[in-house]
Amino acid sequence: MADGYVYRSFADLHALGQRVVDKAAEVVLWQDDSYSQAQQGSINDYTKSQTPGMDTGNPHYAAPSSGRPEDNANVQEYVRQALADVPGYFTAFSVPDPDSINASLTGPLYRTAGTLVPSLKLTRKAGGQLSTDSLAGADAAGETIGQLVGHITTIHMKYWTGDAANAFSGYCAALADAAGLQHQLATSLAEVMDAHLEIRRRQLTDIWTIGETTIKVLDSLDQWCMNRKKSTQTVLTVVGAIAAVVVVAAAPEALPAGSAVAAEAIQSLGAILGTVPDKKDEALSISGATVQAVIQSMTDAIHKLYEYIDRQEQLLAQALGALRNATDMYRQMLLVPSPREFTALAGADIDTVRGVFYDR
Amino acid sequence: MADNLTADINELYIIGRMSLPMMGNIYGKVNNAVAATADSEQPAFTVTAGGPPSQITSLWQSLRDDLQNILGHSAENLFSAGQTVIHIADLFEQTDTDSGKALLQSYWAGGTPPSTAGQEHIPAEEPPAIRITR
Image (tube, chains in turn purple, blue):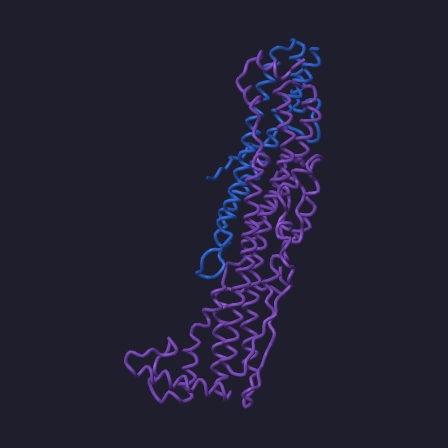
């Protein structure tokens, strides 16, 4: 999870957007160049609004009900109208709280993976935030699929031979490999969801940073020096969201002996995404010498944020595409079919069974 | 020979009554856990307020459904295999000597016959209802 992450609701984001508008309207009044631009805009749109069939530059423009368009109060109102969409730029990033989703969605998948094949890596990965306790419950008494398969193949079936008995033993042995693959599929699904939710957290962090930085830069504009550009670097953390989450190659270390080949069948998400550059962050600047330029710079930064989010989502979609291919390719290993020689014995008589199940 | 057969039949009963149902129950529980994630997944795919859902939505959901079904069918196969193993054990038990039958009965009277390995036991819990999605 990104350092210093705080969940921001729709109302929080709307309030931030409104603070940007308020700050812009306030600074316009004392920053000469910004005021001149705003006043000119106010006059131009007023003129257009009085001309039938002519569109105003600002789609939210409403002619002042009193006074002249160049009056301070009307210029300030003009700025507010021009920035009416700004709160919406911020609330567009509003998402349900990722942490509330995590426990009900990612947690069960990690626990499923850990139940099929216990893995210390999974426990470490959850870092105490998510339970990776086995879902098997007390009735399984700590026996894993791999251990139970081992009891069958090495002890209980030791003296049972014949085509059907051998097929049944082979089926049981394949279940251990299947559990390893199922573990990997569950882990990869959990990791993708983890990364997806981390992108959501970081988009909230980043849009918040963009808003706060914009307010700071607006506040720092000089009153008189029209060409002195103010700039503050803002760091977009969303670019590092996947790299922050997918850090563990999820091959379970507790796979039964002989599972090495199967364990490689479904690559870990880390391996699938191995080509993702490990970017920690991306710096952008919110800058400008006037209110209008600073707001434009903020808008550019927001577009950049959309772009980065989209790119991260594309990477996750590519990873899921690879996972889909692997799942289809190894379906027979993921879901081991019961051997026909064995299932045919479900209603068989002793003579049939004796020939294929106790061949001695 | 009769003693060997009795012992071997006992091994089959352990598989059919203990090992396979224990595995089936584990698979049933993970099948249910994965199925339950569908109940809370919708908010997860919101990327922007009022915007289209995440690009990963259908891919992730179909793989999750696949995993759920793989685990569910694994459980069904294990329970079914357990029934077949018990049927086979019953057939051989009928061919055993009277002393073999009596011995086998005494093995299971206490619920923990010889040759159980690790923590093998007859599951006390009812098998979970398997959830298969289409």
